[in-house]
Image (cartoon, rainbow, N blue to C red; front, side, top):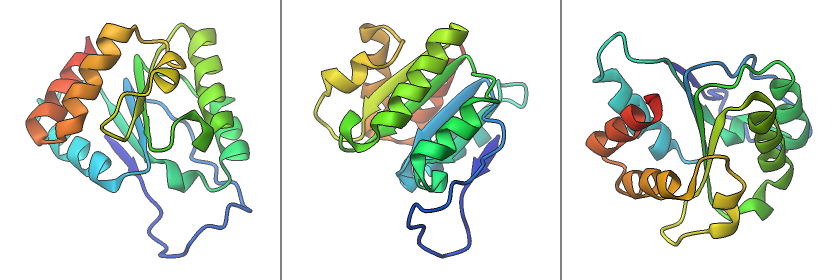
Length: 159
């Protein structure tokens, strides 16, 4: 499992794009919420050693999202499933959502775009390539964010 967080302690004003390297793993989770990433990390640590690889990335580590996602997606080997969980809907990060969607469609990969809020965001969910029923299931599991539900979400993503 890879966890990419900026530990420098500085606030990124978005002027500099960070190259996160290859976003490769069987399952990729992108979220600005450290609590999401911590819950997934703890859940993954409890799964068997032969479980598919997981990459956890904080959206804030992308710095300037327009350039960073373009730099990374050009070299990205999309996983079986990417989960983008974000507050504010698509309008918060339209270029990133579109880049991830375009890349998933091009590669035939699954992308779940889910709201960070408790209310359903049909517009954001529709940007993903995962079907609505499975997207709802992932959302239901993640809203609880306990280790058990995150592990279940990871197992579901690994199918």
